[in-house]
Every structure is written in structure tokens, then in C-alpha cells.
Image (cartoon, rainbow, N blue to C red; front, side):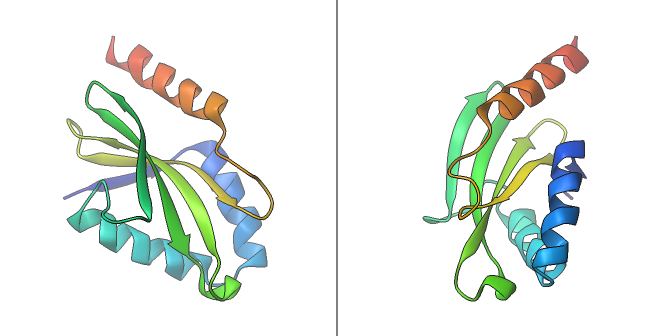
Length: 116
């Protein structure tokens, strides 16, 4: 069974976007159901950005009912040893061009420091 955790940054973005896109809670549940079966996703809607030891950073497109055909982007980390998915970032492509590399690096550093 896969555990799901959220970073503080992700929680803030989720709350802000959920006010704007009412279906976001259901959309995220659908994503979690997919990730339970295939943690790294399949097809063109999932892209592995970084591979470090037992952690994979993945960017996923999430279809949002409220956006009628457009999608949101979710950046998450899959940690194989802990069987855990950490949601790192959530954004709408129309508001932000690409993922926050600094936030990803900070997450990876925090994982490294927790391991030692």
C-alpha cells in the first residue's frame, strides 16, 4: 500500500487552487488511484524528471474537470524504500511556465539529511 504525504508548499497551493477549481479534490483522488497501481505513471502524462538513489521526481499532468480540457501539473517524489509518494508542487500551466527546481532540490536535500 502506498502512503501519500504533502509538503507545506503543496498544501498552500492546493488550498489556493481548490478555491478556484472546485473539482480539484476529486481530480487529485483520481490521480492517487492511478498512482496506487503505477507509482511512476504511464504514458505521455507522466515524466520522470530526476532519479536519485531510491527517489524519483515525477511531473504529472492532472486533468481538471473545472478547467474543461486543460490540466494542472503535479510534481511528486516516489520513494521506493518507504513506498511513499510526496506531493511537492501543484500549479496551473497558464499561471506558471515550469516547475520550481529550487523546491525540488530542497526536498531532495531534506530527504538526504533525514536519511543520515
